[in-house]
Length: 202
Image 1 (cartoon, rainbow, N blue to C red):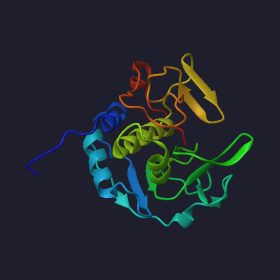
Image 2: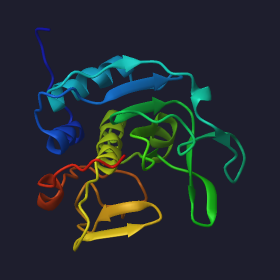
Image 3: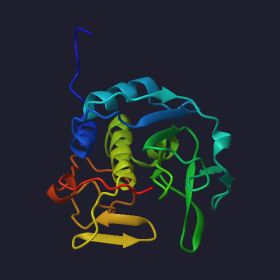
Image 4: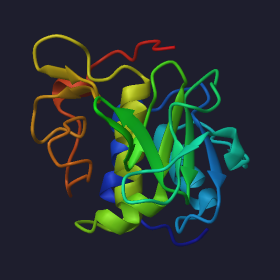
């Protein structure tokens, strides 16, 4: 390609999370018809993390479904396949998790413990996050959920853990959860999360 655009700022956050590593990167599994091209997303991710990314397809029936409050159907993030390494699943469907006292709650993304699955709902991000370009928002949600899958933020001072997982207390950190799930323009990993050693969370 002769002309190359600079990567969107939010996509650069993936590089901050994973740096340039010789090991292969996460798989990107695409189903339905997300409005972000799976191939383009895989290429952008591969360029940022310095490792190959696989784009493949997977039947949505691999996940159980549930009925969120208000009706409709959503993929239930916890009730699906397990993977050997972090695998990003970008879906056009709604996505839900069971929260304490709130079963089948719709979410933008999820990284269920013990699964290595990182699920992102193109529909939820597009429908509810408008503070930044859609591709940037998707990339930021991917980076946040991949952080969870890899055990970032580290436990201890500066981290709050609830039924929704562990999040960084720094309000400007990508791994903070103070914005109701929507990424904000310019968010980056704080120094503590950026320097954390990813843990095996399987």
